[in-house]
Image (cartoon, each protein chain N blue to C red):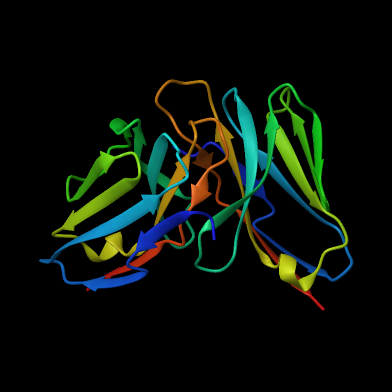
Length: 112
Length: 112
């Protein structure tokens, strides 16, 4: 069953601009992760934020988590053409025997 | 290179064929997963193996049969598939079900 839902579905920006993607989920989580996928290839892990954390940074990435609203956002600052990809949020819950559940993703297009 | 290798990268098979997808990881991870990614749909979790035992089967049709002979290898056996089974099949592994997942490059399957 789908847990995460990203918004917007597609985003087009110019190089140098910031890109913000949002993710909403339904049940309580252990952590939330963001992944990136270049066209037709495997997913690459970007960042993990635990349920007791509110904000995390990694290079040009900033992730926030609001567990009261069951939402997260991913901010990519000073975007580059190479950031063009699909971005997915995934949630890990404490329910036994489960694995990461992914949303539909946001397709980001950065033009130079 | 994530350390998770999938073969083959591309596969075309008829509906009456039997084929197998292979996934290999030497990262020392305890959990391995099969996901299906169809166009315009979120990644669907198919099977979860933890310490070589299957812990989740998300109501996947029996024409998909997983096998995990050891902690480094995971197979997905395919037989009498349907055209709607055409998709990108992704294998992933992780130290445990809460941690970052490492994905293979996927097998692009086309059923004709």
